[in-house]
Image (tube, rainbow, N blue to C red; front, side, top):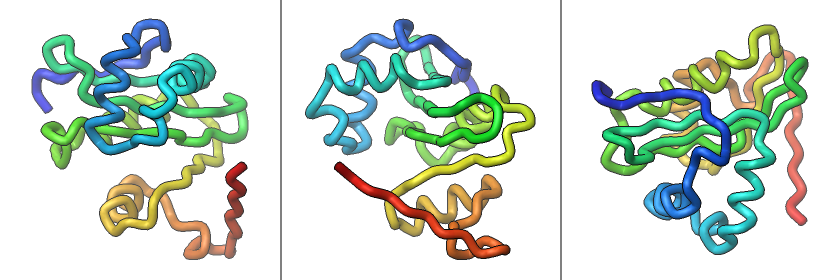
Length: 141
């Protein structure tokens, strides 16, 4: 990952078009179909971390949090040409560095083996595998 800068940023530092390009490159069309909603989501995020190679946005992670007891990892995405080289890990390490002492780090993701392996390598446990047992619930409106 030489040559890639990873740092926390404010949402206004991210241009709408570059964000749409990144989300589109990984097939997250639910976001790209509503560009203004995505811009609002980024602006409403508690913390945003961006990765740039030669000025080009190649990765992003964002969270929703109270800043004291719980942080929800909302998005982590890496441009296809940058995947499998440790950039996702770097994004999450920088994102979570802003939450010292926050005990609960929570995420909801697709049911794919790649995601499970990635998050387990970062110390996450699926709710049903946790000890003591946990339940996770979700409701989409």
